Length: 221
Image (spheres, rainbow, N blue to C red):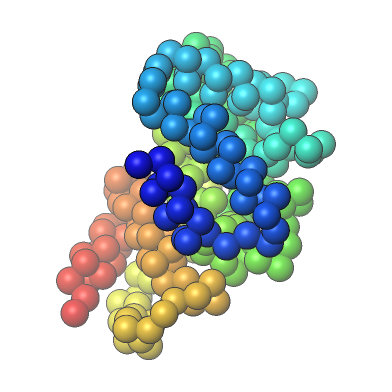
């Protein structure tokens, strides 16, 4: 059974060299499979929180992404917040700490479009990608705000152009729904990002225009 699983993985994944493949297989054998066969929630929780804490820099809301990094970034802070919330650890923060973490997020938000921009992350993909970057981060950070019991400093406005249903229909009509979608036309993530923020504006701000656009997209042919 194990040999069959490993052979299937080998067929699916292409690596630049054998060392990377061997590393993955060793990790699956020594960590992945035992964790599945002998699952221990409390052990997993301790290991996960320990790793999150090891990525913390300076204060309780600043995190780096990996041990090799030296600078914090907002993505990592968001994921740390969500992981700690998943394990019920956010409840251990005081209200002032939750407020401080939310204010840290707020410090990256721009008023014009409501998106978050961290100089430690900015590159050619950050502004106009949906698989990563500003719009992708927005969907994750609203969950982090919710975990803290807060809302962003500014309303997220990049979706407001879709309140014009003629514009939205024209955009959807231009999509060839039968073609392969690469990163340059990442329509699945794009729709997810837009609709998640529309739902957020509807549910947290009572935005009826957002709800109207959601209904239109839901019923789009």
